Amino acid sequence: MPRKPRIEYSGAIYHIMSRGNRGDAIFLDPKDYETFIDTLGEACTKTGWLVHAFVLMGNHYHLLLETPEANLVSGMKWLQGTYTQRFNSRHKLRGHLLQGRYKALVVDGSGGEYFSAAASYIHLNPARAKRFDLKAGALTDHYWSSYPLYFRPSERPHWLTVDRVLGALGLTDDRKSREVFRRVMQKRVLEIACSDTPHDVDAQWANIRRGWCFGSELFRNEMVDRLDGVIGGGGKRESFSGEQTRLHDEAEAFRLVERGLRLLNVHADVLKDMRKNAPEKQVLAWHLRSRTIMSNQWITEHLHCGHPCNVSAFGGNVKRADGGVLYTLRNTLTSKD
Image 1 (cartoon, rainbow, N blue to C red):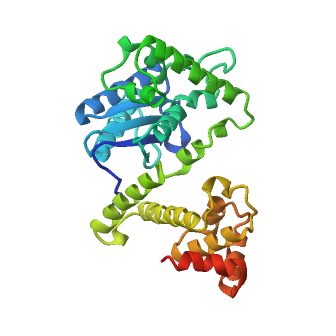
Image 2 (cartoon, helix red, strand yellow; image 1 turned 180 degrees about the vertical axis):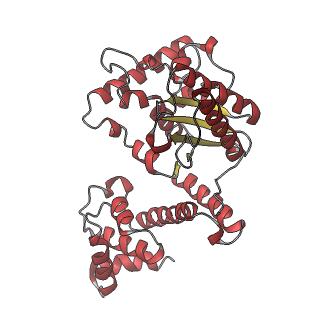
Image 3 (cartoon, rainbow, N blue to C red; image 1 turned 135 degrees about the vertical axis):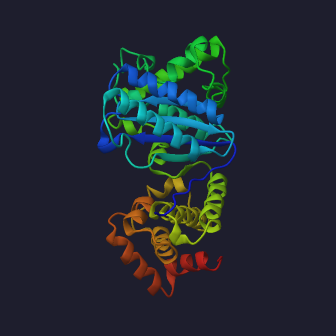
């Protein structure tokens, strides 16, 4: 079987998500929730992990996890395997409980922006799923989460740390700051309650859901280098799983997009609002098709250029250009190689 490497390093922070097999429940009653939290605590004791946020959601769970040592893979193997054994033993079941591989999004912890967005994404999961009355209730009503423990210091397990989440908002772990934190989060709950698209209230959430790392351009480049080391330093490319080589290729595609936008003097925030056939998009689409194996669908989604068929047409336009805007922009990209 192909190996399935992960990016691991001391001090790494991950958004971990794992779902039940076929979308089935992984928590059937309060005892299961308690068992998972106890098992997570044991894993933290074994590995030295720190948990900044967690939420358990019936058929899946989320963790914001920090690994002081580079031991994500071994720790997750123990955590998920042990909980599965305990769940199956208690309910007299057999077989897989969790669906495929857990997702491990590497999170930029160097500043507050990305770390805080990941923590909020996790803590607000019950609100997006409407697990309580969003207008009359409170986020603390969802019991199986680290969020209520932020306000009950005496009940926090030793492995749950709140300083970094609070610190990202300029707060400390005292009563006054915790009350400010409560108001901030309740305001976010009301934003979700009043939105027709609650899963998109925060623009960053889409990157958390579908990305492979979450952070600044500098952080992404650092993670690409680490991923290059994993894939390039451990043997032939073919010895790694398709998922991981795809991850590597996608990372390279993101790097090319970021570099292309910089050279073409286009800010990523305005890309979505530009015309689907804007010259800059056509040249970027051609560049990605020339330099990566990413699909037309991927290119369309990330450059916001309409139907996937447009990507092939854009490539022809750029290749045939012997003057004008497309020619100039094409040369801007290729002359810097």
